[in-house]
Length: 245
Ligand code: SF4
Image (cartoon, rainbow, N blue to C red; front, side, top):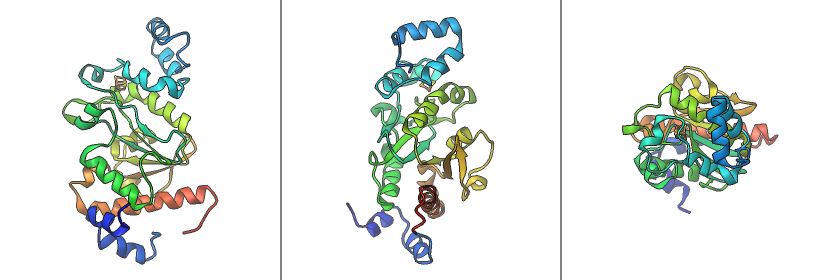
């Protein structure tokens, strides 16, 4: 693994992050009797039947269920659905907005430049994609031209994210960007107003920070994102009864 300073330099965060640290900032019913049958029942019984079915999905059926989903118009334009990636028993859950073009092509969230930045941020914390970390998006399919998700698309896809969270049972959720934060918290607010506090999603501590794609365009806010991640780590440790810095 690269040295910590190399990683911070890679992020364009030296000397700011290091100085801040020195200053004391520690830092699918299992688709029974078969998905097709369940979906037939949904057509008959309406959207609530779909929500109930997704709320009972198990991991073995999850990705295939997302891949065959046509509950919103984004299904028509996707190459691949992007259900999520990582340790399904992770303490850390990172939630972004939606897949971009590279994610759509590969079926994995946060690849490409923004993904590299996220991986480097994780590495600076001593963490790694897939090890005690799960990464997902609010939307599982790419909006055309990476436009902002529409409320009806968020509503249609939300049962999948809710089910992922219920299955993973993370100890801390980091909402990356406004879409993830406002969707999970069900508020309409700016990132600036939501940062620096511990929120709750169904009892799980939730911390808000900027989306890596935004950070690629805004160097000053990278330092704030680092503060947010350190805050998230302290929040997790506190929740687990370990108050070591
Ligand atoms: Fe289904 Fe979500 Fe894809 Fe819409 S974005 S088609 S709700 S998986």
